[in-house]
Amino acid sequence: MLITLQEAAAKLRAAEKILVTAHVNPDGDAIGSTLAMLQILREMGKNVQVYIDDKIPRNFSVMPFEEEIRRPREDEKFDADLLVVLDTSTDRISEVAKLTDAPILNIDHHVTNRGGDFDLYVDADAAATCEIILQLARELGAKITTNIAVCLYTGIATDTGFFNYSNTRARTLHAAAELVELGVEPNLISEQMERRSYNDLKVMSAALDTTKFFYGGRVAGMFIDEELARIVDTTEGLVDLIRVIDGVDVAFLLTFKEKNVYRVSMRSKGVEVSDIARRLGGGGHVRAAGCTLNKSFDEAKRILIRTIGEFMIEQGYLRPAEYDNREEIALADFDANG
Ligand code: 5GP
Ligand code: MN
Image (cartoon, rainbow, N blue to C red):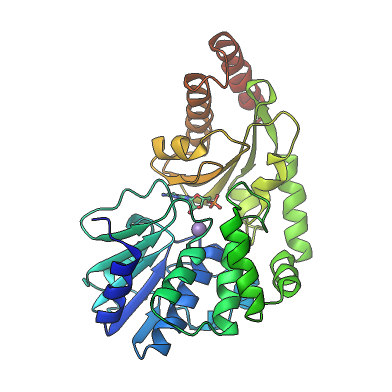
């Protein structure tokens, strides 16, 4: 059921023991929004705990209270009276779902979030869930400390590619300006977020070497297979490297997770990759989306490239004649090299 921001605030006020979570494969917005929420609710005297069922990339230690994020252990329970799910639909929280049967409050900014049999506040015009949490904090009359501001700023900055992407609106910059007034130092966050180990750079280079072009260069993809995955620490930012290539409309990264499980990350300059991801069981934003394919490497590649091509032709990004031709070329190309 869709609810208003005021109703969401009322749900939070009424709860006492609150479990806060966000999506697996967490990004700056997922972590920033949960940690801001943690602090806001604690300040209100609530008993709060954050759980995320994944590794937390080390760059995010710039956010206060990051060390408090727990990962659910097998058969663990958390006796909450509210489960707050941030920055995702409820199907991407993995084992956190098993911690509690508490009613769900879902707060998100993804257009693809269709909700379910629980309370959902969704604002698809918000650049980041952190932008919504800032509004919510005001609604709750919470004091926004510098620590909270750092978390919210990091989420907004990372979800907008540091104010580069098309989701950057005037309201986004107003929110960021307000957070800077509250004590955030943008250069320190940027420095921390762009930190890479030498190994990460070598992975970038190896990943770039796997780049292949499809459909006459309109689509570019990188492939992290099982072997390359062994040396990869984070895939953060990799797909953005090839999105910028002249003539490329859709960029993707296919990454080995485990046997017959591959993660897809897509980026575009306008093609609705959220729709492509949805066809493959995932979701996201118009220009940044993803999904998981439970297939072998070759099958995952084939299905992904075909689905992108079919979508682009249906939507008029590629001409049918071009497509017939290109699919053959594209598939022949990756079979030969892949
Ligand atoms: P990324 O490529 O950075 O992992 O994800 C890009 C965007 O797509 C993020 O906003 C993320 O939340 C969303 N996204 C990625 N993978 C999935 C998925 O499997 N399901 C859904 N619903 N959204 C996803
Ligand atoms: Mn987000």
